[in-house]
Amino acid sequence: MNELRYTLLSDGSSDQALIPILTWTLRSQGIQIAIQPQWADLRRLPSPRRPLPEKISLSLELYPCDLLFVHRDAEREDHDVRLTEINTAVAQLAENGLPAIVCVVPVRMQEAWLLFNEEAIRIAAGNEHGRQPLTLPSLAQAEQIPDPKRILYDLLRDASGLSGRRRKKFRVEVAARRVAEFIDDFSPLRQLTAFNAFESAVDTIVDAKQWHHISPSS
Image (tube, rainbow, N blue to C red; front, side):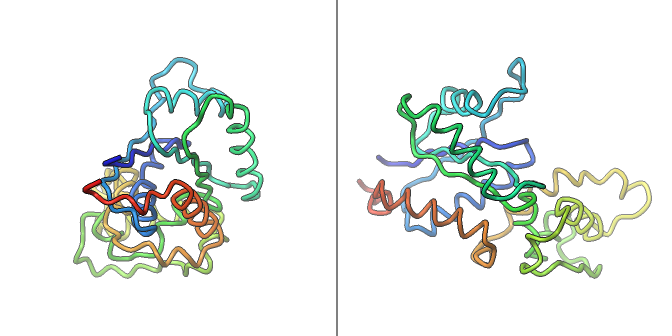
């Protein structure tokens, strides 16, 4: 094994922002070999509203991997409810010989995991040296914010320094997907219960598979 391939199955294309977080988490577990991420893009398939077990099967068929991350935002549901939904779907497919699977369930929305780094928000907004004051919520509050996506989008618009027409034309969705690319260290997220649960699940898989003992020259 000279590389680790993982696939992210998520609610929507904006959730590709999770990929740098997933890769960082794997690296933090001591994985040294190349990591090849891919996002399961099922948007062009007919009948897009498919049940989760079918989405998992399709993702594995179209994007084969060693590790599958299944993402669901908790939104208004309890974190454990979303975990149960994913685990139930996985259980229905267990006899098919699945790869390792990890649930990714941020409380509320994945944008809550992107609200702690002001520099990354400014860079993603295309105005790295801007001086517009930004008021980021504390990480202690991140899991309590009803709409973290709105907060992130507002921060990006403010950080852009744009006004008038240019502000209205600012592609905030694109900028939001890029925030995580400019963060080198996601360890502050360990203050969040949902991230700790996710990281613990990754640790369990990596330890069981002994991926952290594989050297690049193996």
